[in-house]
Length: 160
Image (cartoon, rainbow, N blue to C red; front, side, top):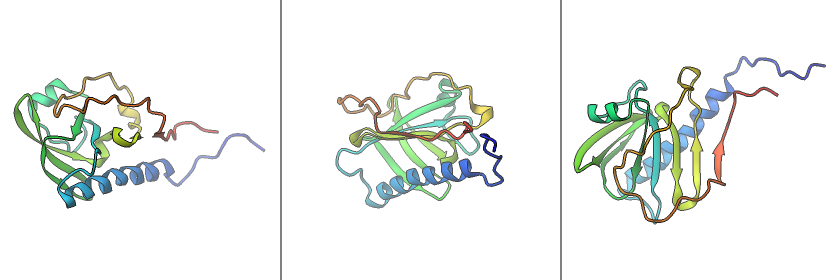
């Protein structure tokens, strides 16, 4: 018997990634429905700025040509969540901006208030991710982010 797993005809990795992105959609949908973040919750959302369907101001796409992290915490407005993504108003250097972000473009979601994080793997053509600065929109709370011991990371690229 071979130790190699056979190639699957069912795209399990895509199905799981889609389900985990739905978690982000549900959480943002709850915030949209109530109009506010509950308790101390706040979100760091990292996404591919060049992904299909992403709409951000040109000065942001020039500053962050690959990936960008936004903060949903103190100053955000007009949060609208759909089945495919969300849009939100944020301020960058005192300039308001509207961002449209499909869930498929998201590569990371963190709620530091409860040490919860999801990481999504980029497709093969997007695997070369460079380090990037945070977008510095809403200033995060002064409390440090924990070490990530509760980070959920699913890597489907390995075969057993």
